[in-house]
Amino acid sequence: MTRSRRASLAFLFATATVLSSAGFASATTDPVSVVKTYVEIGHAKYEDALITAKALDKAIDALIASPSDATLKAAREAWIKARVPYQQTEAYRFGNPIVDDWEGKVNAWPLDEGLIDYVDKSYGSESDENEQYVLNVIANPKFSIGGKEIDASKITPELLSETLQEAGETESNVATGYHAIEFLLWGQDLNGTGPGAGNRPYTDFDKANCTNGNCDRRADYLKAASTLLVSDLTYMANAWAPEGEAAKAVLTAEPQKALAVMLTGMGSLSYGELAGERMKLGLLLHDPEEEHDCFSDNTYNSHLNDAVGIAGVYRGSYVRVDGTKIEGPSLSQLVAEKDAALDKEMNAKLDTTLSAMQAMAKRGETVEAYDQMIGDGNKDGNATVQAAIDGLVGQTKSIERVISALGLGKIELEGSDSLDNPNAVFQ
Image (cartoon, rainbow, N blue to C red):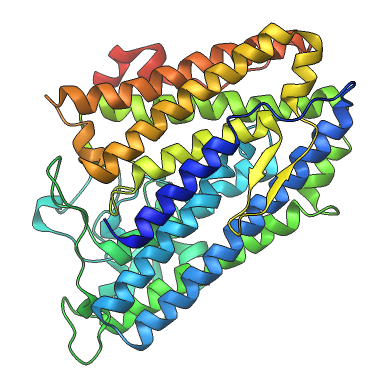
């Protein structure tokens, strides 16, 4: 375990601990003030995501300028740090169309990595679902998509975002965002459910001693993807600033509708997205390709940060990457004034999930990575992941009770076949 990963995990635990308190007491909580806290914290989270993405961009510049084991390691560590605040924003995705429509630019997964670069022979040479399965843009300055000839002699941010992202209307053609950068920094993880992450050599970026060819174009792709990430996060940080479009959309809504947005984000991420698509599906299939950060083996940290972010929305609290704490009037206070027992239940469920996620992250740092935990026949690893899933499912039931207690009407939360109809997963 590197010093950076230990520090990152320590920060996560500290954040989760802060979020384990229900917040400060208040005689009367104004729903408008709760929404204002939500917007303020959203802005801070996206600002932190941008700050850490800029640090990653600088580390990538250093890698490209002077490829070495040290600069590659530093870029990987910067990527892991950048995931911390971004994952905590994900509770803002569902319920906020501005975020949901944008999210695929920065965090789409899983990706067919053969679109971007060379892959191992075990990857295969074709896919019935994806004509660009092994396009390998880095090795091919000219190619066609949908019968249209593409000049990719220069790899630019525009090429990635306008031509390659979801090329051929195929969702797995992910050309931008954290996971494209992750693949370029780590390479494929060819270890299955065995130990080890991707192991791309720094010489893949060394033009003087190039391995696997096209080191100049690989560096250009990495830089273009990093530039796009900074640009996309700049847009979203601005959108959550006081006069930004995302902030205004929530602040100008009827308070009950704004509260519904908050709880939609919490519930949909808890249940359908995280417990279902990102966790239970992989556990059912015992498939290492179904882990979120599959190249770096950082998945357990990303899942923990999602849980921290969900709790933060309810508790009106966030610890910034510089250690500054933001807190204000919260859903927890609002619910406590309506039904103290329900607020106690909700906080207890959040704590149960956080505890299970912390146990999973600790196992990830000290015993085995997430793709090993979900492996077939790994009784203890499977149980560790299942405990986190159970926590998320349990807290979603309490979220639904909170929605009812606040009189917010019927809210459709994201579902998942892996939870609601597991047999469909195997059809």
